[in-house]
Image 1 (cartoon, rainbow, N blue to C red):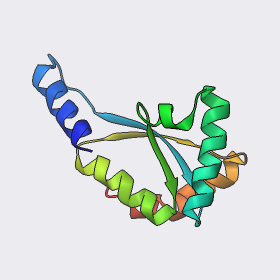
Image 2 (image 1 turned 45 degrees about the horizontal axis):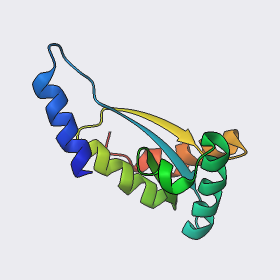
Image 3 (image 1 turned 60 degrees about the vertical axis):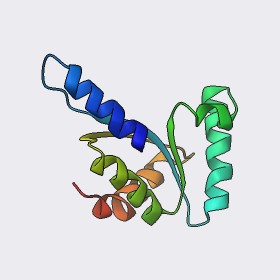
Image 4 (image 1 turned 90 degrees about the vertical axis):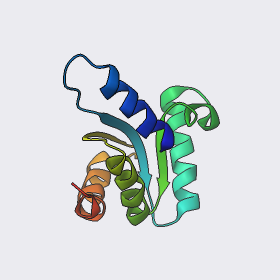
Length: 110
C-alpha cells in the first residue's frame, strides 16, 4: 500500500494535467481463505501462464473472505484510488459478480 500511495503522489506531482488514479486488481472470494488462495492460484497460473508467486509481485491480487476484500480495497481507496477495475478469478463469473456486488461493494468507502 505504501508503494501505491508513493507512486500516486509522484504521478500527481509530475502530471501536466489532472489524473484519475486507478487500481486494477484480481480478486478470488471465498469464505475459506485457504480455498480462495488455491482457486486464485489455479486461475492466475492458467490465465497468465506463470507461477502465482511471480504474478503477485507485479499485480494486485487478493484471495479470501469478501469482508477482508473490502478492507483490502478500502486501503487502496484510502491511498487515493478513484477508479477500480476488478477482475474476478472464478469459473462462474456471473455468480462471482453477484457475490462481489452483494458482499463487497456495500462495504467500500466510495
